[in-house]
Image 1: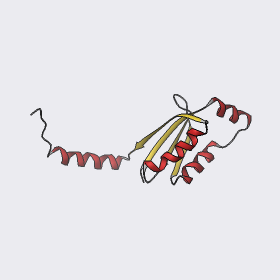
Image 2: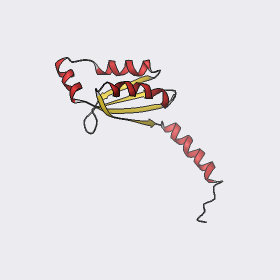
Image 3: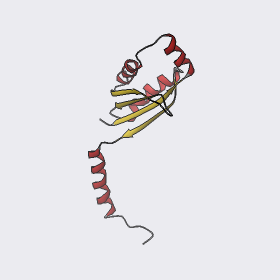
Image 4: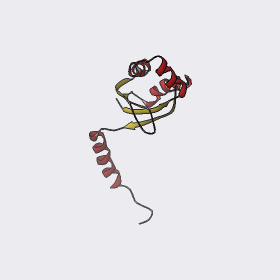
Length: 110
């Protein structure tokens, strides 16, 4: 299954809620990704531009969208970004395919 890295930021309201009533956000994230049909490998609270990161697997990126819509609509998170991640083996296969394509491509600059 394809791997997707999802990052985001907590809203001020969510931060207040976590201070007033601490909760396991990893467990909450895992539940939302799983109900959407995916699998969460890991969850991290991060520093910098975003507050959290989840490494997930979904059959298709479109399967991930409903989960992101739900958490976004809750007002608890913002600045949610998703990137598709590739293993070293997947990248090597892409390089090999690029080599085959390059042998048939004729640049207009030549």
